[in-house]
Image (cartoon, one colour):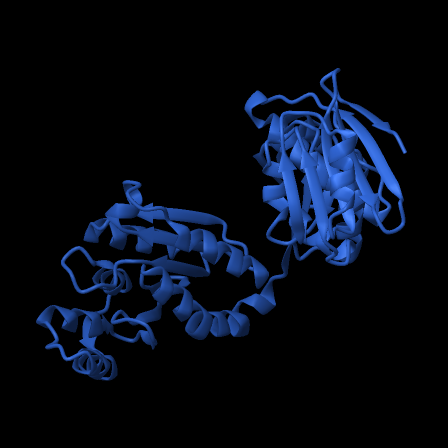
Length: 385
């Protein structure tokens, strides 16, 4: 099944607004096992929209179109849809009455321009909009079922959940199963990872993707109608390749994972490495009762003061004279203490603090889960105790 998405609007095409609707929609579709093959952006010109609808509807089964359903002269999507389907526009009496009621409830007189929003392509099926004046609709154009939605994000998302998602589940989602497995990595370059992965053979149902946002590197395994054997074989191969760099899988929220593994006990933190970034990235999930970010070393007096707090755990990131960093996790209740030393080779110097913060979080998570700690390329690692 081929699925494509069209975004309309000069403001999207020119970059005056960011098209967050499509990003959100793609994630929603993927959760149903539907993966779009192409995305298009077109301006407000009537002929351009019409021609794009005619062309793409010949090549796909489902075409999702967003934007251009408003009452103004630059909202041309509905007319373009009617022209592409070779039908006339007719007044939808039900939606016309809804528009009148919408304005009456707000003590307003409905402008004549709003009538345009009730003029739908003949033969189309209306999709209700519970949050605005632009109803959606769907109709068949050439080979594709074409679904049209308003561009206002709140209206679009609500319409998708109540009017479009149920339709997709009944008519499209059952024909295709797409899953995405996400592996989150640190310590290997995207180019080297790609080179290693390309040496391997994967089933045609498996597609590998990458997303780099240093210091994090995401490896995506997109499976479309893959068998269990194909899925397991691909993941087994990839896990062997990335074993030294793998932080976690599926969702990336180290702070939440760490908080759960520490049973949400209170923590105290000393950090003279990341300028407070480490605490900042944890604080939303981990109960931090005190955190000291400094450029000075951790003294015996400071250690004693941390021990006198109400914290169960003490975490420290300490810069060393050789430019390495020592991470410590101490349980004040059991007196158990774990330490590890890292000297990272950071490719982007302005991301050095972020790299050490990520490595510290990964180490704590792996330590608590009894997983071998990261071993980034061109870096030093020493487990101290």
